[in-house]
Length: 335
Ligand SMILES: [Zn+2]
Ligand SMILES: [Zn+2]
Image (cartoon, rainbow, N blue to C red; front, top):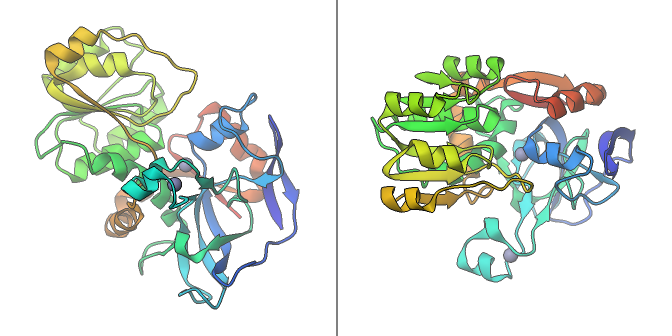
């Protein structure tokens, strides 16, 4: 089968590999229908990599597909459409015992430590599979993984109907936050995004205003539209300064993006004077079932976030698109 393999830093190629087989009675063999690309893959394939990956591993972790073969100890049948929960917690460390499985000390990550889904087939333990609800397109269901991560933040967001929200960045994660905030009734929603294609996509998905961070007065503009945001989402992980500036008194800042190279200068006095709350949001925590439900309820909205479907055989095009942030929305790779 074809698979996208991390060979060495900066060397990530489409190669021929042997088709995997279920090794344990609890394993399930999946024929991949779609695998989304995201910032994590970008950090893995960039040179030098910002995210570690074992040489020889197939990458890709936003996976939907169809069961081909299910071991006797599973509750799956061939033909069932499923999505993959790609981070396997150890269930032994203190974080796992406290229920913070997304903060496990000893995670196994599909797509960096175990073979992932940028391939025709992948083997996954049954406990890390979820059935796709009837009627939901199996390729659109690949959005369930990033949406589950967004819901880990949205579940904590203090937005209520009519509360102003600011989303910094309109990449796929920003667009998912925008859609979820809109469904929660937050209003107005202001998106900050310099890329014209992405700004247009944010407008199409219901942003009330889109400002460009290249405009030196964008923070004042946001304050003019919102009077200060109840919730600010930083999807880049580099924009805490802006987030502090545009948050309302007692506002909440959710930092979702990860950039290990970033440091930011903030005025702690502003955090104190406004009594701001700043929270990190790290991957998904039991939110995959709600993500699948939301996708099944609003396929018309979420399908607008998928802008590019690139065949697996055209990996080089997909890689270029990912590294250049060229796509207006989510890129799905289709085996
Ligand atoms: Zn991802
Ligand atoms: Zn653990």
